[in-house]
Length: 146
Image (cartoon, rainbow, N blue to C red; front, side, top):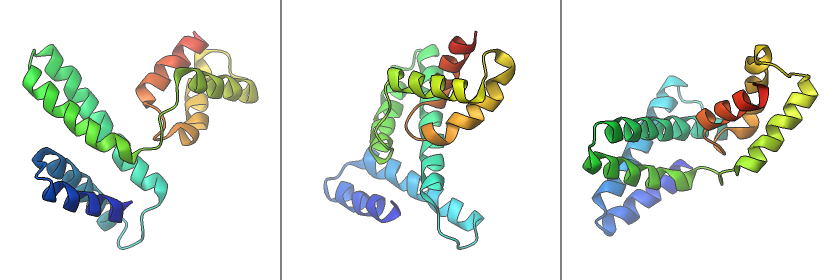
């Protein structure tokens, strides 16, 4: 993953895509920070997904805040950054696929009310990590349990 992003940075530099270069360098900085935290141990696929998901969530939160503040210029910038990050995540699942995973986990864990939400989220998180917005998943779980 890291080598792919480094290669993409070089390609973006050749194409003079400044915003893309900046965004990809930010991803590399986050990866490097995670590697330092692990003290030289390699990062797993889950580590990369966690980093990318965190960056996606930051961009989405910023977009919401900028829309509330009526800052279309900043919304556009954050959406562009989000578009550069998303290709490194696995293909996103549809709502129907997410609901099917939630329903299967509910049946398996025998959860049918809000008291089991934490248990249910813990069970489905590994399966959905990087493939869905966990905020939206949480809302779907609440609607299924409520």
